[in-house]
Length: 176
Ligand SMILES: [Zn+2]
Image (cartoon, rainbow, N blue to C red; front, side, top):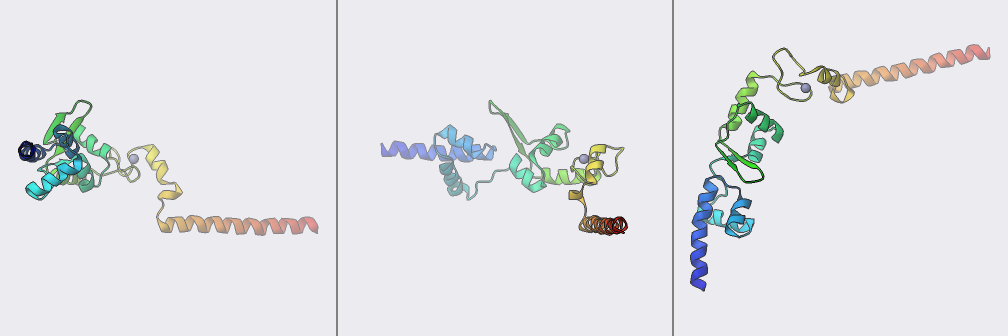
């Protein structure tokens, strides 16, 4: 009984390492071998000292590139980055990215400027903002630089003081 369990452990360890190198998520490996994700992590750490595999998950790529997931998917749809591994896991596609994907994204954005408000890539005919909506949005207080904010607040204060003085003068005229 003990031998059987040991043998099964040895087999699943190799399998785990293999599956991980193919880029399979740890959770899915755990499901396949009927162990917990933590056990898979342990096996990987014992087996090769790391839970990393050759490719980046979309989450890892998001972190490296400093972009949200939907932007990564946009770049993928536009053919800017090509997944190294893609497989259908039933309810969803798993995408894995080559290690240089973040560099490719960086190069792409060096040549394609981003909207100052929403950070989306600019169409060819735009210089600072991707749309009129974003251009109007930019004039909102929350997007202003600290100097601009200070100027607006100063103007408001000056306006209020002026109005107070005017109101005072008018009152004085009425009372006279
Ligand atoms: Zn925009």
